[in-house]
Amino acid sequence: MLSRQTITRAALMVSLLGLLTGFCAAQALNSSARAIALNADLSESVSVNLSASAVNFNLSAGSANNPGSTGVTATTSWKVRPGRFFLRVYAFFASSTAALTDSVGDNIPSSAFQISDNGGAFQALTNATPFGGANAGLRLGTTFLLFSGLQGKRTDAMNFNINLTSVPQLPAGNYTGTVTVQVQVI
Image (cartoon, rainbow, N blue to C red; front, side, top):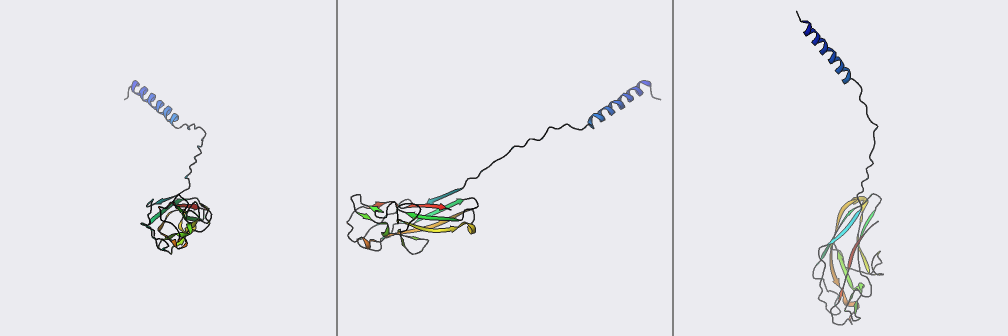
């Protein structure tokens, strides 16, 4: 037989368990939800890198063949948003009449400077482009982004020639100039 003290303890334990069970079964109280707006922007980018920054020429007066000492590879990389359709690579001079100059008034025009892109025929820099001087440029190529993607790379392997047949009276001298390569995405 159980003692009165044991029964009292057991009753107290049962009451306490009932109280704890009621406490645990009570519904949780939650706050209202608050949202945090997140905005992330991955910027568009286009870049062009050149494998070399200088080309030398040994000129022969009146000669059509005065090749450059080295070719230059232009590697274009892009990451653009939808809605862009074309990537165009241009080479150009600041002036069509003085692509290269001896600094005393004698000039080699852009029409005498030629580029062969990716093994194609040599072409003079005589076209209007969005950059550089009037009629002093050449579009090397176009990439249609719908087919090639909104992210990618393009390579233009350029070889150079100076055709002096149009300037046979050019005096001996050291002629310098800068041809620029630039990319446009539209």
